[in-house]
Image 1 (cartoon, rainbow, N blue to C red):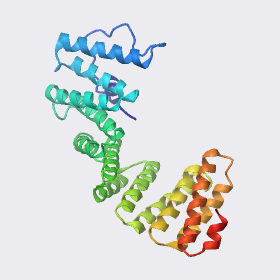
Image 2 (image 1 turned 90 degrees about the vertical axis):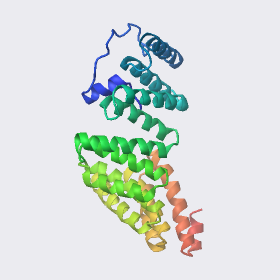
Image 3 (image 1 turned 45 degrees about the vertical axis):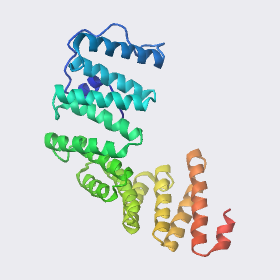
Image 4 (image 1 turned 120 degrees about the vertical axis):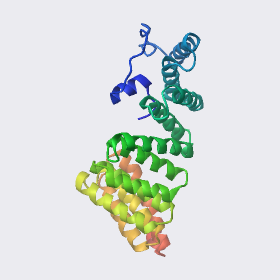
Length: 291
């Protein structure tokens, strides 16, 4: 999910307020319209709304949000971020800090900040969204858990590893979907590793590997990714024997499924890391056999 139309997003959440004037018949997303023409159409729409209604009008705010969303879709991240920031400032003035429409724009800005390598700014935005959703929906609602997850991801990427760990752990407690809990444990393991807590990271990955092996099978790509990651975590923890055993089994499972191009590429990485684990353990002949 990423930045989307304000009205479309609100409709999906059941909070839409219909635009107060007819929608133009020309469809900027219609067939045959290039991205450049679509952007130009949205820019003209925004200029028209500013001239007719001023900047601090719900129709203008929606038009600016939609233009920013289109900038994001075509890769103009900096232009999108600046427009979203201005849209958020105006939405706070018009709707209020905690209004659902304001939070839609805040979420769009958080997405583009994360996509623009601004994780600290994204974390600040997700923290506000988490607070609002907790108050409005409760801590265990799926949207609230999603906000906490995004906050944890942003904190991890901005180097706030222990804070990320705390939010991942809480999200795991609150998440209802077991598959989502698997994904959260992977994020938690990454934060734990970044914080130097390698054995804790290993424990999380072992749980995920057991769950995915039961759910998907030992030769499924998603299971092999975790199996490989667990072997690397053992290496980071200085547990050479466990690293060798884990990477060797992952490599064998990968070889049994190399008809899949993605798995074939993954087995090359497993082979390299298994050789490194042999070398770290002083088993140089076995390492050399893999090169």
